[in-house]
Image (cartoon, rainbow, N blue to C red; front, side, top):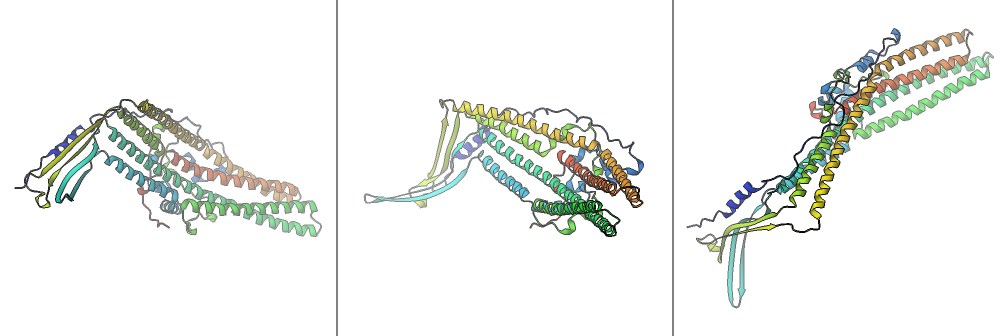
Length: 498
């Protein structure tokens, strides 16, 4: 008849499950109140009613600047926000290949593994062991065989130490997950901004090249007139100076366009196909979907900031510090560990499972801190101070986020007015240039007047390009600072890793 082993190990394990985690000494977590106003400051609304009818901004840009900002912007997928198909594909390519994003994802995997390791410490490790020993001494030989199941030095979590260590690791993992989401939002915004900047610099280059061609043509006419004695040397020199100035601008923007492409390639993490670059001949691209930006008003609640990934990451760090206080408090209380085993033992391997061969051990141990020169108290004090630091960090993160949104809203409030005014200025300087040119040909104005009006037109056109870029990047900035554009899975796009 086989022996029935005493259920000591089973009973001990059940007792540990019931007794562990009886108390949690970590303070109850409460989210700090956001140290910002409930709404953003009211900003002046753009007013273009006084602009000349013929000088309004292009319809798509004016409408975009007046479009309101959606409360759901922080929940909208980036592929729904980006309107240009080429830019969507470039962003998808960056999400597949950007190395910073890869590092962030790998850090999450590492933190997840570390959390599993720490969480496993809450449970007993049960192992099976067996062995056989033969000993010869003083002319006699003895044998000893054992087979046991047991656990070694398992600490009962009466005061929540292991639970809080597990919670600390979990919050660190969640912090990195939000950090990765924040990295992804920033990447989408940076790629969109770099792509739009490239488009703007291509437009500036095209304008400079057009101006250079016009200046060269004018110079050739002035040269021919000078050869015939109709134009002074001063006028010819002035004409040549405008040609050289235009050549400098062309070279400058050629360099800038090349650098913009290099910057975009670095962000994407792979070569960007030419077919996905902005078309310089098509004008300013309408890359960001303004129709999803509904409600640019101070009525947008600032509570949406608490869903921003950087704010959530700061909160997870605060929760981790909260759990660390529980770990420090548990150090003041006794530590109880258990070592237990149950199995069989016999002097012969053949009798290992025979009747009467049962064997068991149960060895509890307790350790109570009596004197450690104030080390435990200092550790607790440090944990409490760290928690206070994280509260301040969390509050500062919200304040920074509030300022970023407020600044973007303030810039957007007058964007339509600025665009309309600049288009009016372009139209006015263009008329001035055409009139001065006609008058100069008829002898009613000097060539210096023509040069001044042409420079004014060129400057106004360059500024118009800058403002259109600012309007587009403002859309991207608003979307970023509201915490949107993070979920690449909202509309998955295929992009192979390089």
